[in-house]
Every structure is written in structure tokens, then in C-alpha cells.
Length: 143
Image (cartoon, rainbow, N blue to C red; front, top):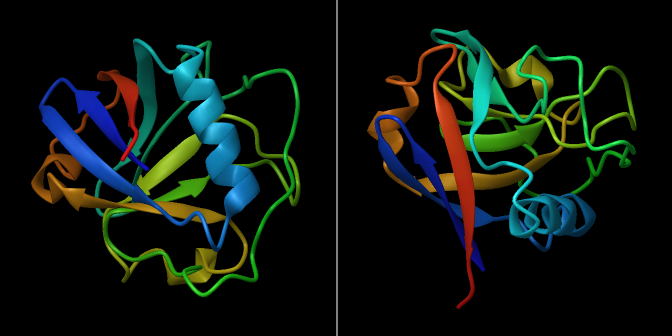
């Protein structure tokens, strides 16, 4: 299973880390299928670091109304360029907000602190084009 993240600058294809973060992937897929991510904003973009979205209010303080546990023990828990990772306000407080990593150099300290649950495998060039306030939607692709 993959996902397409449609942005104002093009589409990125994401491959999920289902083996390493099964609950996080299942949550992201569920929210995507329900339309939760349709027309949300990237509310926090820090060049050279991350592009973050998934807040239903577009401000960075909202979620789906529940929290999920972190999954930090898998093999793919490294914040490399293009990785999708769950944002949270402390361990086991994630929900819907996620970020896309710009580069490894500035994000290695996030390893095993935030759950990596997928990676952009097509459209990597789009990551740096995303600006704060850009909208996106997520489409799940069954294989």
C-alpha cells in the first residue's frame, strides 16, 4: 500500500513502513480514507528541516480527537530526506499531525523520538517547494 500526497506543487508518492510502524500507518490510512487530510494546510515549514501538516485548524494545535502511541523500535526509525514522521507534543501524544523531512543533517536528533512511518519515493523535489500555508490532500493507493 502506498499513498499520494497531492500538493500545490505536484504529487509525492509515499511508501509506508508497515512492518516498523503498523499502528501509525493504519491510523494515517484511516484518516486519509475518511477525508481528514483533504484540503488541510502545511502549517509549519522550516526550510532545511521539515514541512508539517495534519492539524484540522491549520495552526498546529489540533488533532483527530484521540492520541496514538509512538512506535520507535523498528528498523526504519531514521529521519532521512523524504521520511514521513508523526509530530507530537510528547511521547505517545501523536494523532494526525505529521512532517516530511527535508534532510538528515538537521533531523538526526529526532530518531527514535518521533515515529517514522513512510518515505517519499517519487516527487522528492516537491518537498523543498512546499511553503507554509500550502494545502494538500492524501490519497491511499491499494496494490
